[in-house]
Length: 297
Figure 1 (cartoon, rainbow, N blue to C red):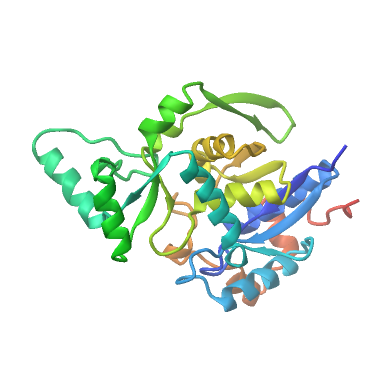
Figure 2 (cartoon, helix red, strand yellow):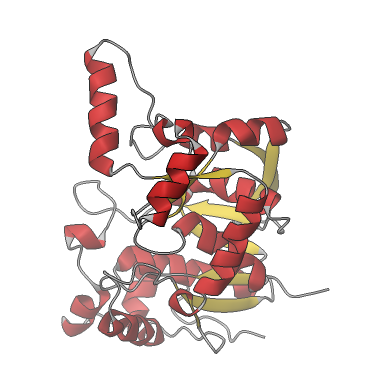
């Protein structure tokens, strides 16, 4: 039997905090318990926000926590060709369409509808669902605008997908005791999700699905804030004929106000804790892990 494969996949757009430490330690803990492998992946498709110094800090922080990982580390910015090949597969099946709308265009369109008394649905993150404006553009107009170099994203076509794949999609969830449960994915609540962004030739959804398959990831362990994204990932795995890992979405580490830790809120970084004299032993205990884990096999 092949060994189970776990991965921790941070983005180098800020310093790691306790929430990241918990997720990394939990992945490592699962890998040890299951006799599996622990991978580190750098998710740096956002080349405008990701910075080399933050990537170096990720390695430093994780090593300080006592974690080890297989090398070489997969860096997403080095593998855009893999994501483009997956996109071309989706395009060939006729399940994507170009979208020229800006966020402002979408917000104004939805605001007009809501001003007229029409409630508008939101996706799991609270953003208004895309109204499908560009789906109605003629092929000639699409070709003209693309030929003129107009910036555009690519969206999954929900209408085409419902006709192509009417059967519900399922995946398996596992808990810390190893119990499994079959759940139904609900990708339609995301609407016509962006699958290739305007500013980079992929998206989080597409790249993470391709990477998990190429790296042989069997168990995805990540925060509960990404649980709804699993709907979209299971759909893409089905469309691209990729394996679906087992999923575990852990509780989040919260700050004293009850909000989740986040880089954008300048949550206290591991580097700051280290500078204050906090030890890796104390971090492990604080997060509920054995301060002296047994060596991995």
